[in-house]
Amino acid sequence: MKKLLFLLLGTFICFSQSNRFVYEVVSKKDSTSGNTIKENFNLDITSNDIAYYNRLYYVNDSIFSTQNQYGYKGYKLTSFLIKKKNSNDYQSYEYIGDVNFYKINEKAEQNWKISDSTKVLGGYSVQKAVTEFGGRSWVAWFSKDIPIPYGPYKFNGLPGLIMELYDTKKDYYFKVIKSEKITEEYKRVSLENSISRAISVDYTKLNKLRLELYDNPFKYIMNGRLNLPEGKKLQLDDGTILTKEELKPAEANERKKLKALNNPIEIDKAVRYP
Image 1 (tube, one colour):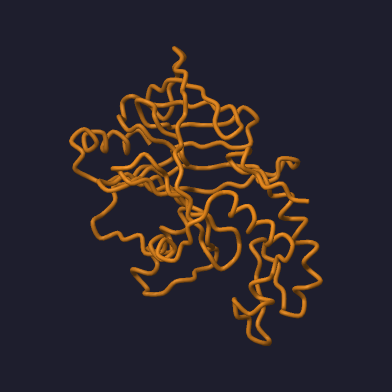
Image 2 (image 1 turned 90 degrees about the vertical axis):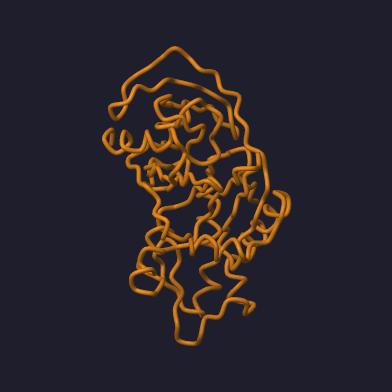
């Protein structure tokens, strides 16, 4: 990793290239379980914006550019973030499992306390900082050798790239595992498609929509807004496959999953399900 980052360092000094940092993210979606999920997320830093999104989108776009088709096994829609370079706001594009994306504009500021503690990570000297954000206590390790004031998710404001980050309960853990140059040919087709159809809301409205989905988990199929032809089956995120006739009996189990997987990064914004 040091070699890759070293090659990029000169690029950042002159700000002439677009670059991507890949974070390995280990999380507990259910705080009452010891099970964790490991995913990779991209942090794209370009002359126009900052984008943080699941690497599945990047893989999907790469396959589309070579095979001219979407829908590889494992691809799924997930929430993502965009921050324009001339703005202090993040645009959070939230996917809650229905047919729409919802956009929320919000500031994300952290009051960091930088300590004298240092260590070596991936061949780089990193320094410790702590903050309170989203109802959690966070520890970050950043490198001044990479003068980028950003990190994973909405974390920003330190005098160097955040290379490692975790909350004190260890529900979320982020670490840079790779860096890449973003080629001029790369287009965020998948993200742009979602951005183009996003509906602007606030958190009150978003949580109302989440509660409505909890009450009727398959409402977008049952009311015909999402077409499931006769004889076809629906595959849920956990791999469960259901026919249209099996949807109603499966609602109780779907509600159970929604209540269990309610441990977001910003825990103070978790939905209060009945």
